[in-house]
Image (cartoon, rainbow, N blue to C red; front, side, top):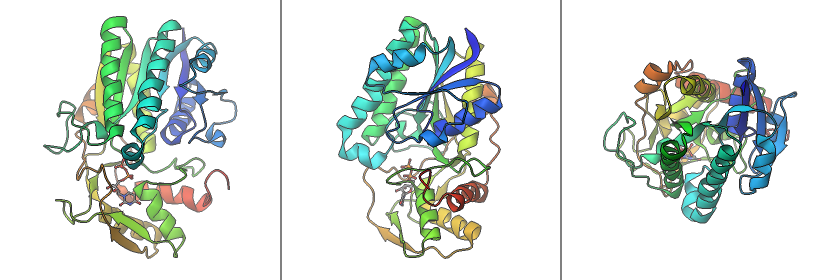
Length: 332
Ligand code: UDP
């Protein structure tokens, strides 16, 4: 087995591409597998092999798994929009759950026995206590969260039955971009808070919509825990190290433990960009929980994770750097 050979499924997407870059920096040999439905070929570094394929076409996964004797798979490929999952749950169950099942079966067939899986704080749903620890009850309040929780359960069963090792990383709100400004967040349509605020900063004719100000929070807008994407990348590599030792099937929260309301994020963006950003409050977005804030002590204690970008302004600043350099995203 090539200890440094890893397959990155969904490696052309936002978190995946940042992790690929981090893996290369750490001396790994990633191969990227992506269907480019939302990812960008241009985000894959030169010299990193790229396989265009789809998790719903098992033969293409088999072809990718034959590229090297992989030590592990990092699995980022998923549909990941709360609102879209409420409108079109079939898409989410098919792409996320069936797609992952196909991947796991292909891994077993090719004797690849470790996976780091991108899970989410959306598995918790409406929270009973903040900060959230990993054992908090799972009551997803949208289909997206349900699909990720179903996959987590599948991974536990696959560990018990087939010895497939897994670490599930429950991201809170992935944000920011590689400090180089060379790769970043580019979704079409963009639905995430920080890039949408920054688009409004870039184009004064664009008004930023805030979805609801009647939540039981500090100013009525939803509270989230924003975590820098390169800190997420670091956790993936640590998870692989841990799986080689005594972590065989486990889940970890990844967040800074600081909750910011949507309006506080707007304020941070005004500070960072020096621009006035027009905001209008509209109705709630279906499926949004009021508050998600991580308790991430286990990731620090067990994986040795140490996030490097815990200031919101710094996170927003790296996203702004990318947006100013690439106002039209990868196309531009
Ligand atoms: N949000 C908003 N306007 C936008 C995008 C997002 O008010 O244009 C709010 C959204 O309702 C949620 C928070 O910002 O309360 C974070 O949403 P995002 O889509 O960035 O991440 P999620 O928490 O859904 O993973």
